[in-house]
Amino acid sequence: MFFSRGFRRIPRTSFNGFSRWFISHRPEYSQAGPQCLRDSTQKVFGGLGETYYRGLPAFNGSRCHIHHQSSSLVEEQLDPFSLVADELSLVANRLREMVVAEVPKLASAAEYFFKMGVEGKRFRPTVLLLMSTALNFAVPEPSKGLGDTLTTELRTRQQSIAEITEMIHVSVLAGDFMLSRACVALAALKNHEVTTLIATVVENLVTGETMQMTSTSDQRCSMEYYMQKTYYKTASLISNSCKAVAVLAGQTTEVAMLAYEYGKNLGLAYQLIDDVLDFTGTSASLGKGSLSDIRHGIVTAPILFAMEEFPQLQAVVKQGFDDPTNVDVALEYLGKSRGIQKARELAIKHANLAAEAIESLPETDDEDVKRSRRALVDLTQRVITRIK
Image (cartoon, rainbow, N blue to C red; front, side, top):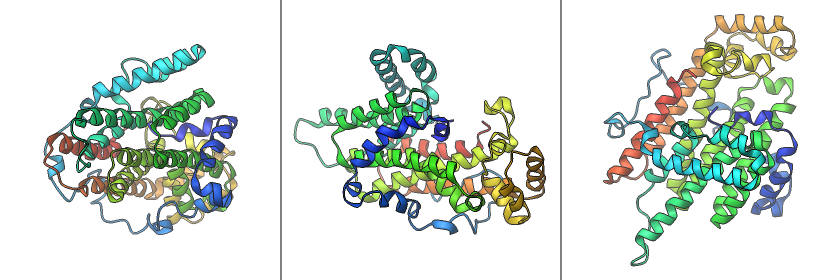
């Protein structure tokens, strides 16, 4: 998977030390203590809360088409991955060398995650590198004679965010080592706000995992709870990383929040389509067994939407899916409902919001910037039309 859902397989010890390190370095934790973690689950979506998934606009059936306010960003067909192919190779090479040099025994893990030839389809680094170019405007003028040096240095620092994000993502296998390397790389940036943003990611990943492991039967039947957990486990990593790229570029608070909104909504759209594909995809296309979530007792958006149409399904969900008969009953209700269609429509809604965030960025005449923005919009379409 391109995002961070795989963290449910991490041994609990993997986050213990470094999650405490990250959280302890956040200003609010040094003063407010653990209460902040308990309160954080109440303020994820900035006021959207429980109503954001209701009242979906008309989507002309379930077709996967994104309507944009402006056509200027979709004038030409682009391959987003090819635009940053050279930089992706640099990022992958640095990650490979770092893992193998520091811990030779992890060479096999490095080869698995960072092997040559797969750089061109790395989703998260692609988003972050494109975002770096898309935000390459209105930066305060550097001191005379230092322009090229500072521009190169900024790009290198933004590449570091892509590397840190990938290290956090792949720590599902390498565990504490990859998180420790992410800490070192983050400290080297010497930017307090960026450190806080990435600390938030680690906190959210741990919180999301905890929510999944400790949910009550009522919480498992709550769409609000599920989307909150989905943000923590899937969308926080890409949204806060996009914002970190903007912060490093010296962009305004408004621009940084647009970058954040793009990442958040792209991540949510991706996970919602993942939910759909678990019911509609084949094992071959998914790289995992279909119906994997429900067989592991994880209730996702299609079932939750089906439950709204057929309240009697809630009793089945609360009983759990250890009994294969309950799985069959749930699938029967899902087949009679619009659960899959509604989940896809919600994904399209979030993809639209991601595209709108890019279209709301300040205008620019720079062709490279405009090309990167079109590529970011194109990625929103690719996310909702993917089949694996």
